[in-house]
Image (cartoon, rainbow, N blue to C red; front, side):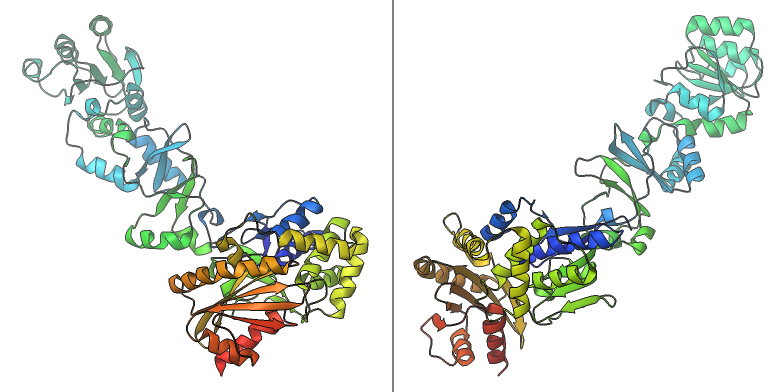
Length: 545
């Protein structure tokens, strides 16, 4: 419950989408114990930037995919272990913690992993009597594994050479197979101890805690031969000593299947179906080890929880919406094709702006609106209703804007004009940025189409865009999945729109929709400024005929 609920608008967000998300998140935080955070699903346009800067508000953080990530799954916080510990110690740790895989780390970075299967394989496959030298086994590991005591010699250091031997033969025979550096496992046999020292053995392991004579201790010290005393009898000691091998010799260091915290579960599924490991290490973007991800934990994933504002169509929603849990929808558009996992709070009103609905909710809940939030909501209403010129504008929109302007301390006429001029400034924008800055996708009668819009106070500026946009639209239509593309060049002062269109049958659809003869790729229409109410419904109706 400590994870935030994201309040988010549609892709290519406009001022209403951003400001309504911010204001609604602020409202929810005042009436709920859960944290709510406003997010954006795309880049903010110049108009919205002006509004946020004017009211000194930070731009919401971008979130371009709300699919379930590893960070949304319960990761087991298994401590990393050093590569020098013994197989036996690693095995005991697995038993104590009921973990079948342990991460091996160095200064927080993942070095490798060791699993129950790796240890079992090591125990079954160790026939090499020189394994301790090959793996550079520390003497501390041998002491720990055998629960032994260093009677003679230094506990530091490691086995550099030699093999493991059992001192069961008589000294005459032992002289033929003891070599320099060997480790001899034996009991309380003075002659065997003396023979091992004379043959330059590296270590003598005395079993059953048998006493070692002062003479042997002195000779061993002089020749550099270590002596270890263990409580185990010879058979057990011989079985255990190979388990003192450091795990670095058997751990997996290459081709480790690991994931990053930001990886999406949907991208992992193919890998998980091919590899049958129980646990996988997780690292952060810097390569630091974070924990272990188990297959079982994927059953109880914590989906991201969202509140959608200013849209309710899947094509306009942030990527990964199918994997998220939608809690609420606050919107003023037609009801689209978005499905939810469970019943949700859905508030949809035929108003000119989502911000008007959010304002009403503040009033209904008796929550005071601070000047900054009032400024955001007022700006959103002025933007969506084109300062009350749009046919979508209702009396509640106008009334809300006037009240909010009073709280925010702004003049509606002056503020709106400055907003629109900031939004229509296209000097630093490419044709692609202009086309997609307020672009929405639709599907009707199996026809996929997109519609963008730009509003301006400068008719000449709009006219100059036409020769740039049409070639871009032609190419975009060919390279995308859209059957048709439309773009509205809306003159706020003249309250008119020139509708550009490309795609097969697009001209016929436009002429049927608006009952007028169009030019080759455009149609100029008086008193048409609203995409939502005046253009999209007519286009969809024409496509269905």
